[in-house]
Amino acid sequence: MEHSWTEGERGAGPGGTPEDTVSRRLAMAVTGPFARLGGKAIDWTNNLGAAAIFLVLALVKVPRAKQLSRIVQHIHYIGARSTPIILLIGLFTGMVLGLQSYHALVKVGAEGALGTLVVLSLVRELGPVLTAIMITARAGSAITAELGSQRISEQIDALDTMRIDPLKYLISPRIAAAIISFPLLTTLFDLIGIVGGYISGVLLLGANGGTYLYRVQVSMEMKDVVDGLVKAVVFAVIVATVCCYQGYFAHLRTDGHGAKAVGLATTSAVVISCVLILVSDYIVTSLLI
Image 1: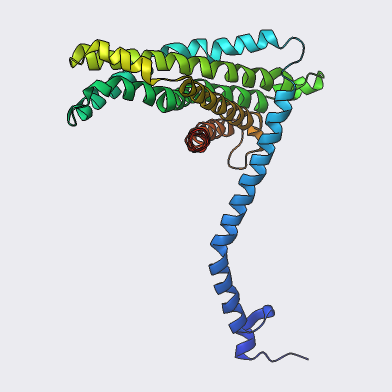
Image 2: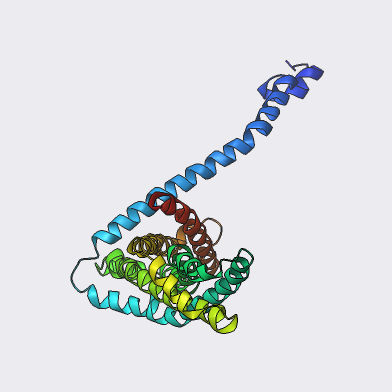
């Protein structure tokens, strides 16, 4: 027998009355943004946990046989080849800091504190942060692109086939090299930055050179140096882990495949590393200060 549908039943469909349909749509409209936000939070938490496990497994395999030569190779790439850009950025950072600080201190009659302001700003804050960001831009992006290319070209799978541990062969030396290179480059940045402050503050603006050097000597304590180096090590772990992780798992990205995935992984590695550098800088500073 043919069923006679009423107007209300036609509007409701199989799910119920029209009022139920409207209620469901309103509920989806209200809860949709929260569901998407929750999904993003879950994804970030999963990735954070996976990256932490990735880091631990790589660090465990650092003190293995035949690792020293590979670590030295990556120290040369991450550290030695980054030295010119670090020295250049450090020099002009110190010069700008000396220039701005001198004009600010003159207004309050405290230009004698120029050396104190320059050295503490560089050693405690600007040196570790800017060094980490520059290494991320130069070496971190290259590490991600290299590992991503090896992944999509199945070179990493070939290592597995030959019973060679990819984490031991590719990841552990890079993380160890970063932990060694970051503090050394941070020290170079601090030294050349102090020289830059002397050039702009003393040679160009006429501040007293003896006072500048005396303030640099008496203001900087060993705790300041140690705090800056602790930050450098923390940034090294963050940058190396993020860049290696993004490149190693570039083939699992859902927003691109092949060469596009490598490019997206490189972009994500640089952006995430820079954000985490600034976030961790605040956290570490609050713990050390």
